[in-house]
Length: 301
Image (cartoon, rainbow, N blue to C red; front, side, top):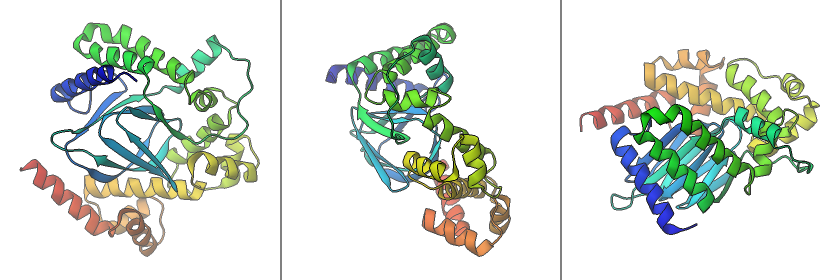
């Protein structure tokens, strides 16, 4: 990685942040800037590239921890619930992150157009991986951000550059992981089908045999590969999605705690409160009130 190229990309990102904030004019491209450490931040990562252009961040999935500092990127190949923290940021050197979504359809198209003959790796890869941000990735990322200053070019040229970025990823250190997401019979793609069902039906009672059927695996094989990819069991995965949705409901609607618990699939209010506190560090009512208060204070600052 050449430092001047990373500096140029970071400056482009900061210019775009100052003019647009997190949401850029480029479809599927987002920015994150913070002048102080923050977290934990709970959310669901979609297939994407998250490049740290300054500072450092840690993302945790199950028992696994992924740290990525300046000049490194996190590649996510499946939808996974994550707990993240920005661990290096200051007013002098703010954290600067660039997120580019990865379209599995484009991955599949590139694989079909440029078929490879080598067999896929046998083990099921993890859904997340960290590697260095090389010059051949920095260049198209910089050109992609430059598109924001040319709105008329975005519909035509931005998808071409994003396609180039995905091609670079497919031929990089994590290419094997991404190739599996683009192959309908790849293990990650099959696990992805079961994850999509859980995300759409997380309030329902979870049936591992049904998820295994969606993935085309036996229940035992499915359970093993699911945990290998996500560092969670299917039940833990569903629980994380439920509790994150509960937090969203409490913050956005200020709903009654018991009603929120029932809405996301819990039959026992005490179990809901207990598991919510274990995940977020405070009971749901207090956690929601504290965050709403903090948001109100920021808006009046």
